[in-house]
Length: 303
Image (cartoon, rainbow, N blue to C red; front, side):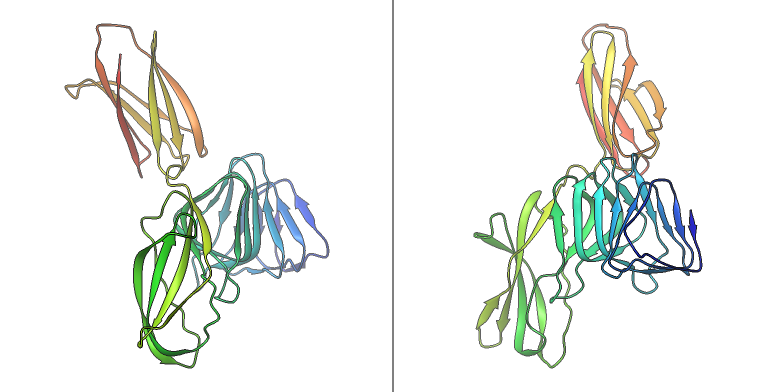
């Protein structure tokens, strides 16, 4: 389905097929657009976010194909992921209000999802299932729109919003009469749910804290994983691929000699299994290596 010219939603809309390509001006207003297929937004298209909700609930992995930031990424009001197979995104995006993970994962490796648009509107992330396989940026709420004697900010992280640790500092502007934006990236986040807050310190040593912001990180599902299980007639390989890219599988003996090699084409992110027939011989150790060209998983198994 191609949308060209100027189109405006006047009620909620469900499109089961796909892909949906937006080439013109699309105004969603306050309505919900539910998609069962892929979404493509062309470089010259206009996607008016309004206060709409964009829902992805297709039967297989869906793809959001966007133009590069120019200069800002494509912005959405609300996004709901209700597809158990997940959604793949090729560019940075911003979700102004709520990103709701109902089921399935978002695959945005190397790209950033920013939730919220300012310290006054920090947005919301709802986790009922699934995880984000890429970078997630959150605003930390603050009522500071000007600065007087601001020395520096301290970023704190906590498991329980009680006991905290310092993970970084950002120098303040001293005195300013306008709103300034500061940024800090946690490159080693804690798995699971953790909390972040800011401590703002003045030159005289006085300070105040922001509210806590919760972030959920799954640090395992974003990597290629593999497990080899020895069976009487061979090996069962269970592989989790976060990309769905073609896989190269190799088995070697302890001397590095390749005893088995094959290619797999998963087609979509998720878990796959493959059985490698192998005669039972004397007790031996096999080494396995699996790669998708971006990442690799290795291990050993006793036969």
